[in-house]
Image (cartoon, rainbow, N blue to C red; front, top):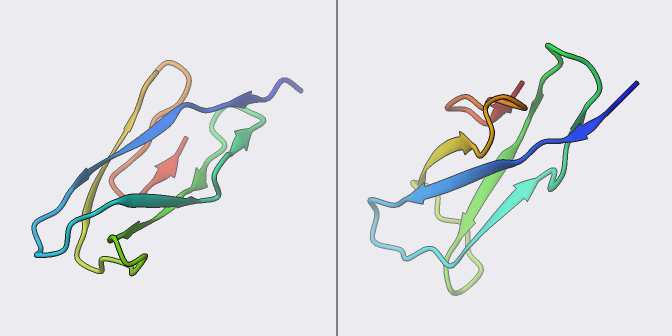
Length: 77
């Protein structure tokens, strides 16, 4: 079974007072082994004090929709 690492990126839009300095993705890498399989990514946006920004709004996108797509919740297919 051929597995491909999926190129997925999260763009960050913040409408709260804290300024984001990092985004942690969990898991950092995913592999999907068959067509139609999906996995979810959870993002934690952090400020300069390494504190999570609770109201950060993420916009998910795939750098190559022919390989993988990602929905508004971080589910990669």
